[in-house]
Length: 176
Image 1 (cartoon, helix red, strand yellow):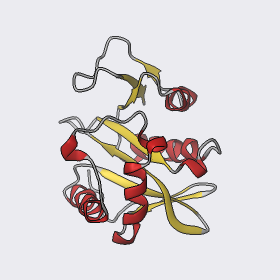
Image 2 (cartoon, rainbow, N blue to C red; image 1 turned 90 degrees about the vertical axis):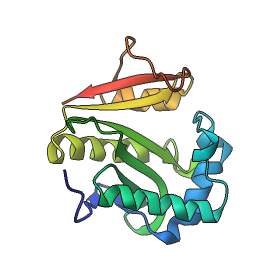
Image 3 (tube, rainbow, N blue to C red; image 1 turned 90 degrees about the horizontal axis):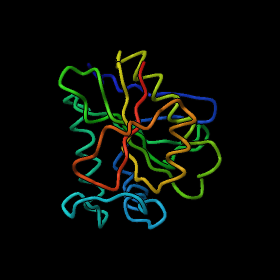
């Protein structure tokens, strides 16, 4: 698995690109906005509370890309470069056949099919380019929008799997 050169992805309305230091304001917003983070439970040491921490987080994402541990894309409209959200593949299994998808989106762009379009593109990338066998998604049991999004794209709730780190989460799976 190699994320170099960085794989930009273009869909009908979106460009999924590498995050830049100049994205730190939006990253801070996405990590602190009550609507965006309503169903996300992060340990204190993983919370982003200021611009400096947002810049550090972007550097961490870059480091993970450079070492092929995970990949995070900034979601932008094709004709407008500021990011409106992020989507990633991370938490790869040891054999690199399973990964977890994670995402967030600015409330202004929710319920417009943007995340659906981004997820479709990332699932295709994961299965076609990375040759993954399975993509997982951990989502809060009460996050109806996320559950609906995942089901729309063929993910199914695995009732036999539990998130040992967060009892509020349920696990969805999509097999290639």
